[in-house]
Image 1 (cartoon, rainbow, N blue to C red):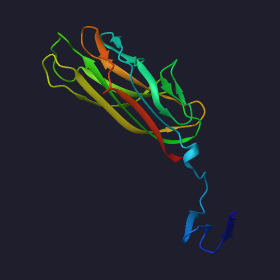
Image 2 (image 1 turned 60 degrees about the horizontal axis):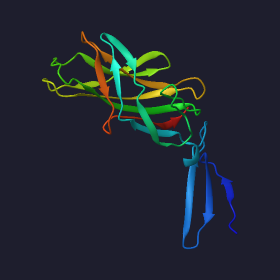
Image 3 (image 1 turned 45 degrees about the horizontal axis):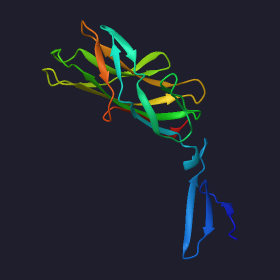
Image 4 (image 1 turned 180 degrees about the vertical axis):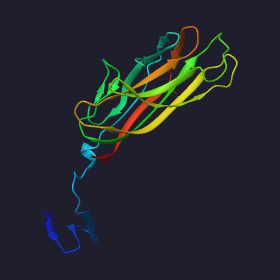
Length: 185
């Protein structure tokens, strides 16, 4: 059986040395306040569209609710009933999403749609809209670093429809919502 030896030195680091079968392996951890994260407690999730359609009323921002089953959710923080991600580890999360608006027979110029990250019930960041005119789908993407407190904070994806008529979000494999912990608080 292997043993674990922890020893400190005057440089402000603690070095953990674990004997290996061939050679030596050394892991050095800085003497810093905070939590040392290991892969078992670093929240991350990814969910794609569910192949459903969601109507977005004219001149409103609506939460996207047509997500499928998560591809992965390392800490079970995805709330499918309310379509939001609420991790229980405080820290800074990279949040990204892409959504497609289907315009079937409505030709409108750019700038009429938007994608947004909401933190709790407040708009946090706006994304980019890719609109090539005509009657093709409009693809929107948003990405931002977001601080979440690990208890009550959550993030959701909204779409703003600034046109004069109802439109549809076309959920498909190109639609996704992801988040992962970048740094613990």
